[in-house]
Amino acid sequence: MADRPRRRKPDRARRLAFDVLRSVHADGAYANLALTALLAERGLTGRDAAFATELVAGTCRLQGSYDAVIAAAADRALNTFQPAVLDLLRLGSHQVLSLRVPVHAAVAAMVDLAAATVGERVTGLTNAVLRRVAARELEDWYDLLGAELDARDALALRTAHPRWVVDAFADLLPAGELEPALAADNRNPEVTLAVRPGLAEVAELVAAGAAAARFSPYAARWSGPPTELPAVREGRAGVQDEGSQLVAWGLTRAAAPPGPWLDLCAGPGGKSALLTGLAAASGSRLVSVEPSAHRAELVAAGVRAYPSGQRPTVLQADGTRPGWRAGTFARVLADVPCSGLGALRRRPESRWRRGPQDVEQLHALQTALLDSALDAAAPGGVVAYVTCSPHRRETVDVVEEVLATRTGVSRLPAGELVPGVPDAELGEYLQLWPHRHGTDAMFAAYLRVA
Image (cartoon, rainbow, N blue to C red; front, side):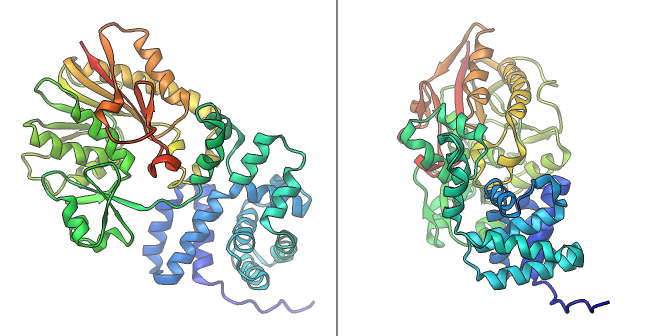
């Protein structure tokens, strides 16, 4: 029997990236959370950490397009590959097609990784398929695979989105904006910070090297690790997308009666942290409701820097089964669970996990939560219905269906409550976009209860 070839130990960055992908695809983990945990556990820093991060994010983002290339290069269906081998091939494809790692180096490294993780028996397959993948440039693969596709399917391939997402965006955007919107999902977002009102000012972050953001008065953009800033370490500021800040801020700008405020779906707590300070400034207190114990803990951690007398009451509860009397709250935020199509820049694997059936399943929960929010509002109170998705079934359809069953609820023009944001008005609603505003694609409807 011939001796087995001597294999090099896989490099730490590629091994970590492979382990994250397996966690994502085998265990349903979120790529960003699994990556952060493994980087800390294994002590990767500097260039190794940056390389591992790019391997994970890029491979997850372009997974559907790479899968089409792999299937064509191997001339076999994806479901005939062992799942771990498919992840190895995806990881290798990203290196040779998008990162310009030299083919011999990338293939050799992936063969060594295959031997160490799956076994020597798959090294020949890994080597052969990756060399066929590398035989063409990515654009050439797109031309080849897209030749027999219709225009939408070809666009889905080139922008690494499922067809149903392309169709959903096309339903909302002018034709000339469709491709830029999809392309924006494939760019890493800047780190955006939010100061906790009453505890820090944007000027403090700017003095430390941050740049004031475009729209939110509480936002700054930062290019390094957020924990480099004392305000973040001390809980006086935190990471939060500017769009997320804007939709919460809009709720506070409408006139409302005195009384407590409610964050109906509070986890992981960014909006609660912002609302806590704004409520305190108006002499009010916030109640934050979250059904998940872990996410409720995150809400509490996010407001830890506030004095105890200003911190919200954090309840682990189901917002569709309220434990409070109807008509209790002056302001109610219902940032409902959604498909997350507005945050594909941050969770690129989500586009491959979700389908139209998930949107329909969430629709029922979203309408129930909006009903609960309206019931919770006091006479004259204001409700913000918010999603991190532009999909019509999660946004306008929810609001219109609920309001069709009610009297005494009026829409407030979002453009007046969130001013100075161009091209963000969707009728009386607010719809942000990454390609227009540099934010997540947040939607907000502001409603007044008579």
